[in-house]
Image 1 (cartoon, rainbow, N blue to C red):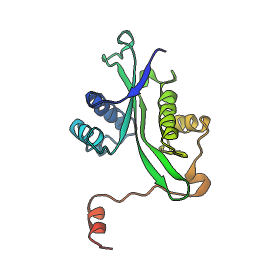
Image 2 (cartoon, rainbow, N blue to C red):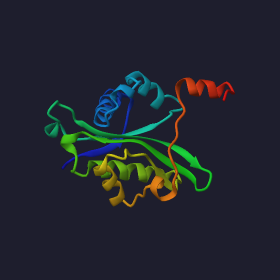
Image 3 (cartoon, rainbow, N blue to C red):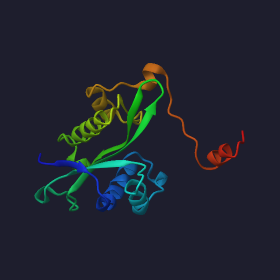
Image 4 (tube, one colour):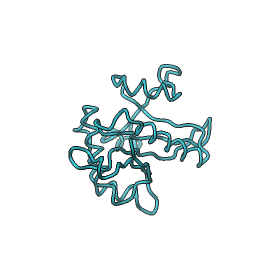
Length: 171
């Protein structure tokens, strides 16, 4: 299938927002999405962006049933491992259902990996839902491994009132 992978621009935020909602719906957590297009514009395209993005785009004649030519995306950011040094974290990897199985997801992940290596990163980190067997299998085929099962690490989160309480020094 004919497609291109390119850096996301401010003008892509509307489509990225749409695909974030599609991803959340697929993951059965659409009620968890709290950001809007404006947040993406501010957080990804300001002087000091919190994330970077890439877009998968098909030519006009291959658009989706709904008329979309932007059919996939990945958001990523740079982080640091106290053991391994520079790392890239892939927050999202999404391809619209009708475009899956055509190499777009692999191309997006490959591009994030290339960008990470170019920035001196030694690892690519991301999470995947335990019930998403097709994605788990896809990642394992790419040479990735399951840190939780192999090393026992769990991804932890503190948010909302707990984050506020923690920031104030509370227990």
